[in-house]
Structure formats: structure tokens, C-alpha cells
Length: 72
Image 1 (tube, one colour):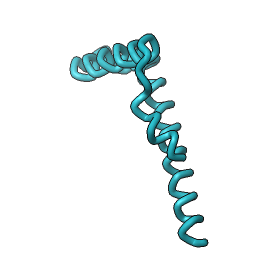
Image 2 (cartoon, rainbow, N blue to C red; image 1 turned 90 degrees about the vertical axis):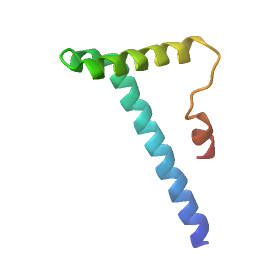
Image 3 (cartoon, rainbow, N blue to C red; image 1 turned 180 degrees about the horizontal axis):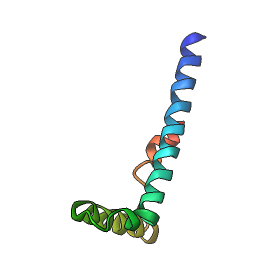
């Protein structure tokens, strides 16, 4: 019984972490341009993230976190 409860808590924590990462990524894609004006390395990281986010929405590719989300 304890193992089932422990596994349930683990998957719940994993689902919460995935949700949190999704939120951070979305905020980074939307508002990242405000943070990268004077940082060229972050600028390229933001552009790559922006392209990834747009392509993920437009193409019939699944999100990389979908398999993790299905476990929870």
C-alpha cells in the first residue's frame, strides 16, 4: 500500500513539475525578448525557443513532454 501511495505522489510531483516547466517555457517565449536586449547569447536562445514554440504549434508534432504527462 505504501509503495502505491509513494508512486502516486511521485507521478503527481512529476506532473506538477511538467506543468511548471510548460509555464516557464511559455513565459520565456512570450516575454523573453524583454530580457535579452543586452545579452547576445540569450538572444539566440530566445530565437531558437521562439522558433521551436511556433513550429510545435503549427506542425503536427507532439510536445516532447507528452509522454511524461501521460504517465501522470
